[in-house]
Amino acid sequence: MKKNKISIIIPTIGRQNLFSLLFRLLKQTKKPDEILIIDNSKDKKAFEIYLNFQKKKKIKYFFLKKQGQYHALNYGIKKANYDNLCFIDDDCLPSKDWLKNLYNCYLKFNKKAVILGRNENFYKKNLFSFVEYYNDQSFFEEYFYKKDKILYSLFLDVKNCFLNKKIILANKLKFNNIIHLDLDLSFRLFKKNIKIIYCYQVLNYHLGRLDFISHLKREFFKGIGNYQIFLKWGKKWEYKQIIFYQKIFKNNFKKTLINKILNKKNYFFKIGFYLLYYFDFFIRFLGFNFSKLSFNFFSQKGR
Image 1 (spheres, helix red, strand yellow):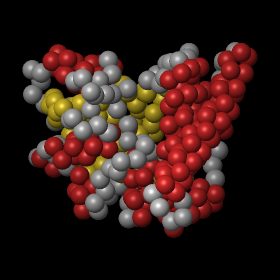
Image 2 (tube, rainbow, N blue to C red):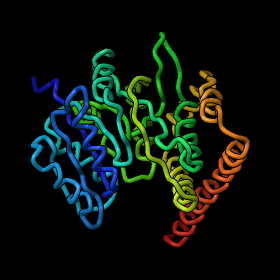
Image 3 (cartoon, rainbow, N blue to C red):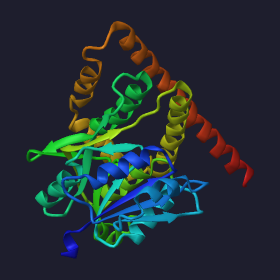
Image 4 (spheres, helix red, strand yellow):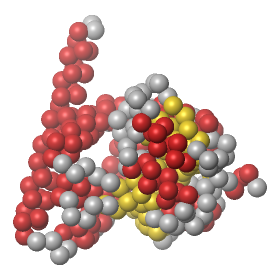
């Protein structure tokens, strides 16, 4: 039946990992019914990779001239033939049961919730990748809370999640042009009282940055994104309520996560981890204040 069929949406900028991602998606224990490649690169890099799979009718390729992840995601939603939508990035590698577990979690909770999966670091020995993973995952886990033996998340990660198209369209929940577009969507889900349920068994591996420069660049833009979120939501009821939830449902996930990451790592790795972790705070602070100063400058100029 069409209502049980699944569309997987992949926004891509043409990373080489797209080949491995498509290969893994075709080998899933539960087969996807269609895979949509939304190429948002400037030079159609993803098309060359797609050519290796063009005989697979379930894989469909779309090239967008208009740049922006939000545009790619919304276009994928529009072009998807089925209501069950899975989202994954082109720098990810799902486990073999990823899709099966995502869909089973969705069915388990009566098709009324959004499902968030578990991300793990793919590179086991790279310091930059590990710190990136901890920065991201610790943020999400800080906003987990349990209720009636169900683990919920206050925020969504668009590189590993399951949404129903009817929920998106009925509540006008398209992605907006903002760096942290998944966090922005999370606030709107919260406003509509749509729950995000975290499913640990939905395993996805993320390929983080492997060098110092690309790592710091990502953290700087995260700082810019943090200011965008604060500017849009900082004074609103939803923002205050989420902070309130985070305080009353305070958990130990963050401490457990860092113990898992640093377990059996040598002394020099641990020192490097903490140095880079705290340096990232400074880089995000720079990004936040750069965005703030730029906004104030152009606001004054526009008067």
